[in-house]
Image (cartoon, rainbow, N blue to C red; front, top):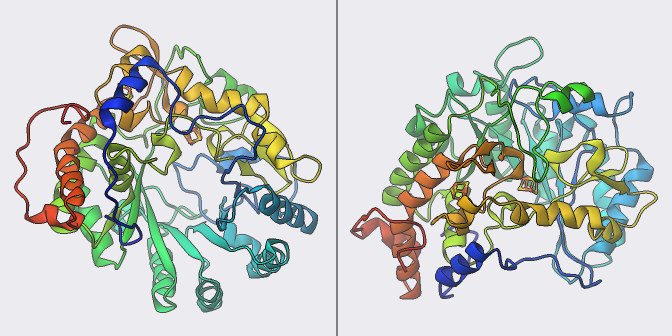
Length: 451
Ligand code: SF4
Ligand code: SF4
């Protein structure tokens, strides 16, 4: 499918997975009781939530209220402990993947990353490592371009679509749109041949214009995109007690009584339609030449492989974050005091990751899944999605249903016949792109019923 993915002839296993799912049986990547070290992906926030933009929908800016005062720069001591312990903690010989995010991680300056790479070389002792940075692109210049290109960094650029869509929410501190500055950053990446992908947030401004967003990104020279739905609630009592402006992530088993959405949240059905319209365009014209990660992940689930994104996997718990001060938290979406696992300087990473608290956090995603999801035909693709968004009730009144449920059902059911056909084509030795010449008999059917 993706130019970055090898073809496989692996047989789909959906019926078996679907049954296991409905019974709540152990999922494929279950946390085991074994003391063996586990692999995980620790994302760093070297400058905390500090940012040079004020995107209206950002969920991390306000985390400032939970941190100590100061400039939130990662110190040399924390950086060295992070690099050394992270490399030492990763079992196997696969490259160790470093991810840098914010806030805006370029704000800490290039010298910080030069130092990080020096430490990576020193502690990797010949083992390969990779670096990914998620940026708004505003500070990228030729010096950054040369550094990123020379070190083969992968850059994630936040760009929501054409100017009027991007500038609806992605504002600078003076309230001006950031589109022009981001496009200059994109130009730096292209000129220096830096590998990059785009993270496009989906808002109520973009959902009515799916093809405008899609065609714009293609014309801008983007080849890889991930669409991220914006879903945030106005503060609940827990948020107010912490001094936050957005509701905190749903706790396992919590029965959310009052739901008040922010105006920048997508409507579930509209988000589903947005994905379907883009999927129709992609599956007819762009398979193999333009990669939409949401489709890649869904297809992987369909083919019985791990989706590769935590939201569409059965369990959480393998995507912790490390803040600038060395504190490690369960997940980017659960950076609250009760989800703090320890500190990189004083604590052992594997112990933090295999602690009862982190195991409970990871398992809760599957354990707390409502019956409605366990019986859902597209369940083994969706897995109830991110627990942070499970603040709705099922039609029979059970709490814990994901807010985006209607949208996901629509999308997964819409794409299933095509995924089925792509799977068959690949099993027959054809490239996935042959789907573009194939007639599909679209029957209204669930994700799993096709096999
Ligand atoms: S809480 Fe959401 S973002 Fe965090 S690991 Fe789970 S699915 Fe992923
Ligand atoms: S589509 Fe809806 S019912 Fe099905 S698993 Fe996802 S959230 Fe649950």
